[in-house]
Figure 1 (cartoon, rainbow, N blue to C red):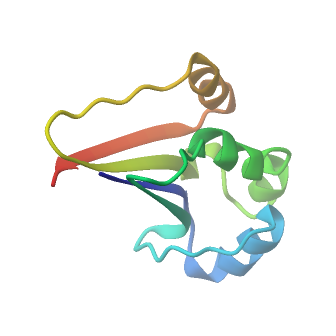
Figure 2 (cartoon, rainbow, N blue to C red; figure 1 turned 60 degrees about the vertical axis):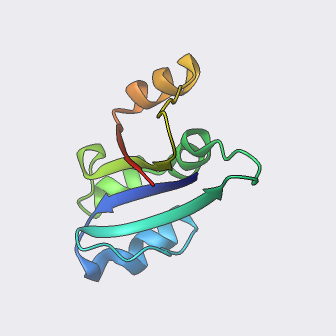
Figure 3 (cartoon, rainbow, N blue to C red; figure 1 turned 90 degrees about the vertical axis):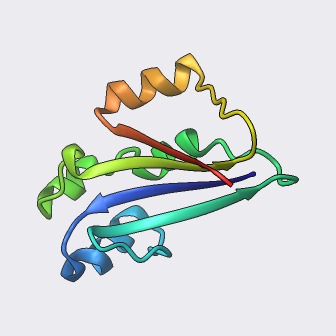
Length: 113
């Protein structure tokens, strides 16, 4: 069982350095559609609270991103989940509330190993 979590921003490659500076973190995830950060959680790893983590990176920086043409519509959080047997997941009400409040899309994709 492996989880892949990513913060993705639909932006042209020319803006990656600006995004790195605004968010204070360098992209580590090559996307065809833009800038991204990826975290990987394997079976025996500690849980990663990815929604809270990624929202903390974005917090207070939406206005600066908008100045370079990036709106919340360009931002998404992804959870990709490789599983065996049954696929179950849950999200806390606080995480869902905070995503909705910020207007950020959560995308989930899962596949059987």
